[in-house]
Image 1 (cartoon, rainbow, N blue to C red):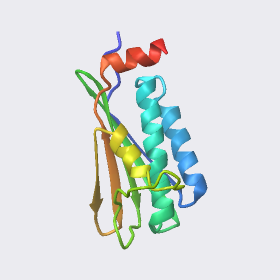
Image 2: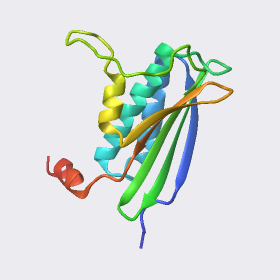
Image 3: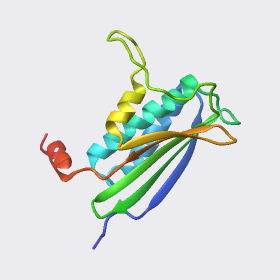
Length: 149
């Protein structure tokens, strides 16, 4: 009998260009589909795309022209918890939420992150900066709504 997912971590390096977000999204979805609820996979993919996209648009690359993407799955009594982390070479100004006009083409990414994740933040070290997003277990009623939809 399975007791649910075991604690696991993944770390992938993707190009610091437009293909990086796509590669990271597909890898995350491949690894976590069937392991965590589908609604959580969808939220993780959306947030990861935003974080990698922001790293590519607004920050320098790590040495080698890459961005490091990591995620950690932790089982809890209420279901799986996941933390995403995107590390880039940093920028002059750190990530900040902006107010976007209704017709703006961008400026909503961190609002999406804040709306889907349980928490998010930025850490800086000698290599650059990491933006992380934490996802607490998905409430049972939310998984039921997705399954019924």
